[in-house]
Every structure is written in structure tokens, then in C-alpha cells.
Amino acid sequence: MERTVRTDLPGLTRRRRRPGDALAPYLMILPGWLWLAAFFVTPVIVMVSLSLQTGNFIDGFRQTFHFGTYADVVRTYHVQLVRSLVYGAAATVACAVVGYPVAYWIAFRAGRHKSVFLFLLLLPFFVSFVIRTQSWNVVLADNGVLLGPLKDIGVLPADFHLLATPYAVIGGLTYNFLPFMVLPVYVALERVDPKVIEASTDLYASRTQTFLRVVLPLSLPGVFAGVLLTFVPACADYVNAGILGGPSTTMIGNIIQTEYFTNLDYPGASALSFVLMGALLLAVFTYARTLGTDEVLEAAAR
Amino acid sequence: MTTTTTAAAAADSPAAPRPRRAGSGRRRPTLTMYTVLVLAWLLLPIAVMILFGFNDTGSKVNFTWQGFTVNWYRHLFAIPNLTSALVNSLTIALVVAVVATLLGTPIGLALGRHRFRGRGSVDLLMFAAIAAPEIALGAALLSLFIVMGVPRGYWTIVIAHVAFCIPYVAITVRARMAGHDPTLEEAARDLGAGPWAAFRLVTLPLLLPGVASGALLCFALSVDDYVITSFNAGRTVTFPLWVYSASRTGVPPQVNVMGTLIFTGGLIIAGANVLFSRRRVA
Image (cartoon, rainbow over all chains, first blue to last red; front, side, top):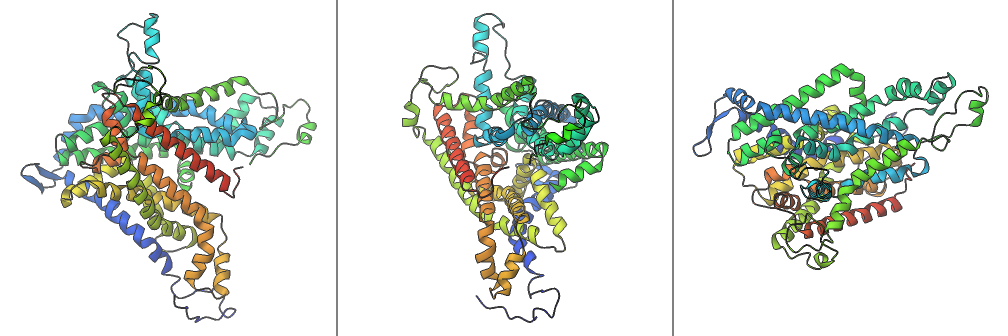
């Protein structure tokens, strides 16, 4: 390597700027940025363009700026669109309700074993997402580990099933995204200053009052981040619906896949993907606005 | 960081209940029980996966317990296309981890160290790439490949995986940078080291743990990915794709065994990481 020529003398200039210092960050960012520009930004633009084309798989597609496709796909698939948002919201609420106490317990009660419990929480990530979902298929199977014995002793009717019901799909979503809720809530609870809790108890607040008026408000940014981390992937997920669901629980992700690969309707599929992105963004922003932007910045800053 | 409260704090008001921090008494067992239950629920499918890898099932259908066997560990590679799917997944993950780490690390460095024009937009790009639903990424890339007439296969999977891994590496490395002193490199430069030597001898050793965990994260994300892969795989089959397509008819026990082995491997690496990491978890 060439030795850089020192044009500045230390001590004479207050800020020591070497030649190339200003350019360095750009050179560092360039390769990765090019990759993302080519394979993340460009594809999104291409997808929008494709959604405004008309034609078919045999004769090819032409850019016609036909916005009608959007109306068509929303009209055709509004049931699945709404269902995806509802399932996603249900799973998110379930994650918050199930996960908050767990985060609370790990933050305040786990004592020395805190890291052990956090590790247990992360353990599912060491197993393939698809296999974990498939395992529920085994557990919930119509004559499987759980339902089989119950049917044998006559607690449940023989035709009772959990698979292919909304419960199975929402349960699967909740299961898969629970850690994404617990971790940010845990981090937020960790950051609550113990002195504040102390002050609250010193001022004769009951346990419940301390929780509701001190701890809970302080942990809301964590809940907010958890909701974002859970809601978006849960709405867009179709692995749970595909493995645990049935024809009546189809989500928008399944439809997009079918549109691309079975119907070969590329404009329709692109339009649907874009509608899904738009709907999620809209939902997230509405939620952010109602909650106030401070939490958004808090969540984004992390 | 938990600070244990001093007894003096409660001394002036004897009636006030002691603040409840870790280690101060009066635990209510319900919440503890509840947490254990939820964790059990989280870990149940893992237990099922491991258990059914030892299931003595005669057929491919692996839904009911038939008895214990280690047969499937012996015949792990008895299903050729499952084996090739696993090999695909592992080799793709290896390539992705290397490429994404090479591309993502400098971004993390730049974001963590330098103030420059356009920093915010790079930050936003990273955030957008992570926050966007996977299916949108997968579908957008597929649209690009369709329009460009690129046939989907092994290398389109690699391209897609590298794209979604770069931001994760960048963020992991940037988080590492936050805890290290920029004047160290400054000192090296003052002592006559060129920019490359200063980087190689000072910055890189400090960064290596962050880079290593970024690369591991990439590997794990890549091996596990179903959604983006399914859109850009063409005829190439990866491990999650194979398992998904088999899930309707019944997953053969070899899948459970492979899952168990990957799980064990991940645990060993994570354990090693904890042992060798210089930063103790508080």
C-alpha cells in the first residue's frame, strides 16, 4: 500500500482531515448500496410498472397504465385482504396479551436467571420456521397427539378438528411471532428506572396503581415496537395459513403466490402485492398517528 | 442493569411496601407459573420435532407415535431430493453469509463512524428493507426477474438472500461500532499507520465479533427463509421449500432429524459464542 502524503501538520490544524476522508464513507457504502439499489429498490419500481401493464402470459405484456387492475384485484380478493388484516391484528393482540406478562416477569422477577429465560425465548429461532409450523400440524392433527386421546374418551366428537380453522392459523401466527413482541417489551421494561417504582410505592401507590400508572406507560414504546414487528409480518405471512389452514382461511399471501405461479397473472399479482404493502403502511401510519409520534421515533431509533 | 435497592430507602416509611425488584421477596407464583407455561408452549414444537425424529414409523406419514428407533439417524440421506434440498440450503447460506457480510460490514462501519450527507437516507433504506414484508420483497424481485427474462434458480435465490441480509449485517456492525472508541484508529494514524494498516490492525480486530455475529445471522436467516425463496427459486428446491411441499402429505422423519441436527449445531455455536464473547450479558 502507498503511504499517504501528510499535507497537514498536526497541531497547526484543529481538525485533522486527511485527503479522502470525506469520500471514505461513500466508497464504503457503495457496493452494498448498489446491490440494494439493483435488487430491492429497482424491483419495487418494476413491480409497480408491471401492475400497470396489460396482456397475458402467451402474448406478453405491454405498459398501458391500466389502473383498473387495482380495482379488479381488490374487488376479487377483498375477502382475503380483509381476512389477512384481521388475522394479523388478532395475532398481534394475542401476542401482546400473552407476551407482556412474560416480558414483565423476565424483566422484574427472573433475577439471576434472566439470561437463561431470554435464551429460552430465542430457542425457537434455532429451528426452521417451516418445521416449527409443521410440528403444530402434528400436534393438532385430527387424530394426533392432542385430539386423538380426547376423542377416544369421548370428550370431543369424532369429527372435531382444529386444523383448517381460523383458530389454528391465528394460533400459529401468534406462536411464530411471540418472541418479536416479548423482546422489545422486555427491553423497554428493563429501562424503567427502579427509582421511579420506588417513588411510586413510597407515595403509597398500590401494586396495581404502580403498574398501571408508572410501569405500563413507561413500557409503551416497547409495546409499540412489538406491535410493528408482529403485525406487518403476520398479515403478510402465508406459511401458517398454508400449513395449518384450509380453503376458508386463505390469506392474501397465498393468493399472491397463486396469481404469480398458477394463474400467471403478473399484473394482477403485482397490483395485489402493492395493495398489501399500501394497506400495511396505511395501518401502521394510522396506528402511529393515534399513538403519537414520540413512540414512533423511539421505535425507529432502536 | 438491575440495581438492588437499599434497605435505607424504605426505612423512613415503614408502612410502604418494599419496591419489587429482582430478589426482593413476596413473589406471586401465578406469574411465574404463567411464564413457564408460555415458554413450554414456545418450546413444545421443538420437542415434538426432536421426538418424532425417533419415531418408529413404517411409512412416510409421521403423525402418531409408534415406538422408539434411531433408524432415521442411520438413514438420514435415504431421500435423495431431500438431501439435495438440504445441500442447496447450506451452500446458498454459506455464499450469502460471505457476500452479505462483505457488502454489509462497510455500510455498518460508515453509519457507525462517519457523519456524511445522505446518511439518513441510507439509514432509511436499511430500515425499509427490514420493515418491508417478506412477500413484497419476494414478489418485487420476481417481477424484476420476469421483466428482465432472467430464469429463476439457484443464483436468483442467492441474489435475493444477499439483498435481505445486507441490512441485518449493517445494523449488527453499527451496533458494535457504538461501543468502540474512534480515537483508537486516529491514534494509529498519528503513529504513522496508513489508512489500510490502521483498519487492519486496529478497527478490524475490534469489529470481528460484530462481523461474525452478522455472518451467523445471515446464515441462519438464509437457511430458514421460505417466503422470499419460494418466489425466486424456479425449479431449485431448498430445505424449507421441500418441507413445506411435503407438509400436506406428511413429513418423513428424516426432516425431523435434519431439523434436530441444525438445532443442535445452532445451540453449539451459540454456546461457543457466549463462552468466547468478552461482553458478559448483564
